[in-house]
Image 1: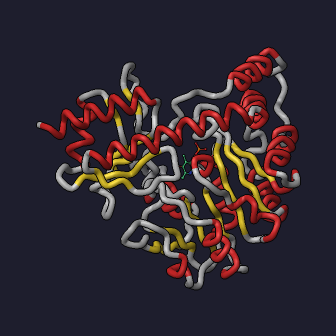
Image 2: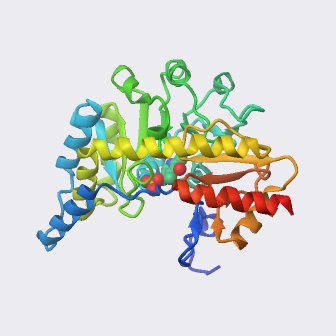
Length: 353
Ligand SMILES: *Cc1c(COP(=O)(O)O)cnc(C)c1O
């Protein structure tokens, strides 16, 4: 506390990210990073850009990156927004599109940054409980609202809502923006991006942090109707016009150009996820059906907090949320096959004690 803090700073409860322990040899399965590293073309592009002229400001409009992304998604350049991480893109979305006189709706269990932004930007919100099976119930959103946001696949459950159901929400709420946070969509079967050209009230955000293995580069995107994108540009250009640095733009452009590498690593993560899920089930775990690069799992005889601590003692870090409804679950990121084999054998050892 300081007497110099504004009222809003005094009242904030900042988001707490998963830890980044500075210990080597740890198996790190707590923040949904990709175990395979970015495409070699990304690192090459960043090196080339580094030899370039960092003396100059980067293109504030990120035109080349936007054109590459637009081509990838078969959209117009004006339907693409880029930012310094999807967390930053979401900040602009909350402030620019979701701060309305009616309350914003989102699930009680979803990305825990959303309530933090609501407090920061003074947005009224209402939590809609997930169903007993941890799915989003589309009919529960039939309420007067100033916008709806959810992660799809959802986090930390990993469960995906079908794109038909996303479309139902978009159709039922023509006067609100529906924001679909697709941070994990590349590990799922379908994306709402294919609906964008039909609806002016749908905004999709994605990140290069997970499926493209660039959490350290900080690049996020939003895709939607040109008017929604222009709203985001107005905020961004009133806040930080050079949001993406020259190295990030070069790396992100190369990432979208190397589709083969991207598809190959996503396929490997998905295969490892399926194998890990079956192994966990055979050990008595209940595993929610995951369309992401993590699994959300619980065991009827072993408490999640106890397993979390025991795993940590064995050098394996996973994520545990001490929150109502989910404090019996562990969220385990999908690593390499070797890492998952270590996880499974340590779990077997812990549970046989
Ligand atoms: C990881 C994550 C983000 C943030 O991604 P960054 O681009 O790294 O900021 C946003 N939404 C969800 C649901 C996430 O899991």
